[in-house]
Each structure stands twice: as C-alpha cells, then as structure tokens.
Length: 115
Ligand code: HEC
Ligand code: HEC
Ligand code: HEC
Image 1: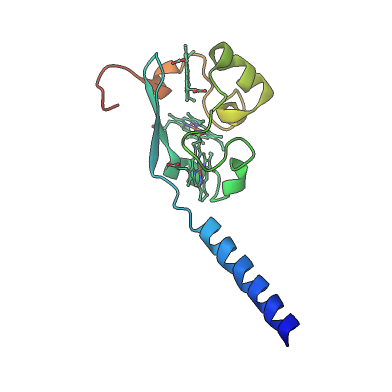
Image 2 (image 1 turned 120 degrees about the horizontal axis):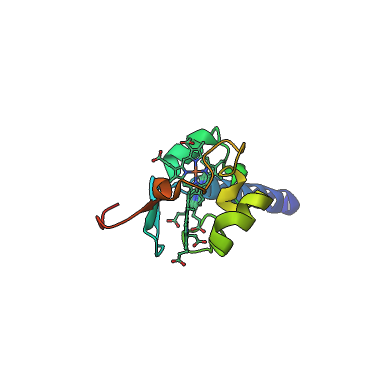
C-alpha cells in the first residue's frame, strides 16, 4: 500500500511538472536591442511559421528565456546563415525566409524608438 502511494505521488508530481512546462506562455513579441536599430521579433507569427512546433527553436537554438544570447550577430550574420543556426536556420537563401543581405531594414528599425 505504501509503495502504491509513493508511485501515485511520483506520477502526480510528474504530471504537474509537465503541465507547468507546457503552460509557459509564449510572448507575442520580443524586442532585441541592436546598434543598427532594434529588431522586433514577432514570436506569435514565428510560431505559425513553425506550425506550432516549439521544438523547431526550443531548446535547440534558445531556451525559453528572453535573456539568453541569440548567437546571431557575429560576422554580420554570415556565419549563422552559412551554418543554418540561430535566426539563420530559416533566414538564409532557400531557407524559408529572407536572408540578411539586402534586407537589413526588414529586421533593423531605426529612429522611431517604438519600432
Ligand atoms: C521560430 C523560433 C521560435 C519558435 C517556433 C518558438 N519560439 Fe519561443 N522564443 C524564440 C526566441 C528567439 C526567444 C528569445 C530567445 C532569447 O532571447 O535568447 C523565445 C522566447 C520564448 C519564451 C521566453 C519569453 C520571456 O519573456 O522570457 C517563451 C516562454 C517561449 N519562447 C515560448 C515558446 C512556446 C511555448 C513555443 C511553442 C508554442 C515557442 N516559444 C516557439 C523563438 C521561438
Ligand atoms: C523556423 C524558421 C524561422 C526562424 C528560426 C526565424 N524566422 Fe524570422 N521569419 C520566418 C518566416 C517564415 C517569416 C515570414 C516570411 C517572410 O517574410 O519571409 C519571418 C519573418 C521575419 C521578420 C519579418 C516580420 C514581418 O514584419 O513581416 C523578422 C523581423 C524576423 N523574421 C526576424 C527573425 C529573427 C530576429 C529571428 C531569430 C531570433 C528569426 N526571425 C528566426 C522564419 C523564421
Ligand atoms: C532576420 C533579421 C535580421 C536581418 C535581416 C539583419 N539583422 Fe542584424 N541583427 C539581428 C538581430 C536579432 C541582432 C541581435 C543579435 C544578437 O544579439 O545575437 C542583430 C545584430 C546586428 C549587429 C550587432 C549590433 C550590436 O548591437 O552589437 C549588427 C552590426 C547587425 N545586426 C547588422 C546587420 C546588417 C548590416 C544587416 C544587413 C546586411 C542585418 N544586420 C540584417 C537581426 C537581423
């Protein structure tokens, strides 16, 4: 009986942990500070692009934290695009979305402050 109770507690705890992980509310938008202009990352739109599969990005490229490094800025984005990591997983020629070259302004918004 005691062993059964212990198993039950373990199962319940595991269930609660799983629920709280799934319940982490994804942000609508995140803003990444950058010298050429801040980048507004439309998280909701990107979830749609990934067909609701969080694993396309988490934790493969980033944990679910807005404080972790993005690892995209080195070498004006060329290394990440070439290796198909970070934002460069999709943002490279033929990767499903626009590459950096010629598209700086689609990500970097100057001036307005509210981007
Ligand atoms: C296209 C990539 C992508 C997909 C898909 C994605 N995320 Fe994210 N998410 C990000 C990025 C980028 C960050 C910020 C990472 C950083 O700053 O290091 C982030 C951050 C987060 C955060 C932290 C927010 C904060 O304020 O700390 C949560 C929570 C999160 N995502 C939940 C989810 C959930 C739940 C899903 C699936 C429904 C999901 N994400 C799908 C890219 C993605
Ligand atoms: C899973 C693939 C994927 C990843 C990873 C990804 N993107 Fe995107 N991104 C897309 C797609 C698809 C679009 C919309 C299609 C298009 O306009 O080419 C898009 C569009 C955008 C846009 C334009 C949104 C608008 O206003 O239309 C910005 C800005 C952007 N992404 C930034 C980022 C940043 C910053 C990262 C890394 C933190 C990132 N993306 C990672 C697939 C991705
Ligand atoms: C897909 C979106 C996207 C495109 C396109 C893009 N950038 Fe970025 N850029 C970012 C993000 C996001 C960061 C912050 C990355 C990080 O913290 O790792 C960044 C950071 C930078 C930085 C570092 C700034 C700092 O504060 O240290 C420079 C420089 C830069 N970008 C230049 C460019 C140039 C030049 C282009 C066009 C050739 C370009 N970027 C195109 C998203 C983009």
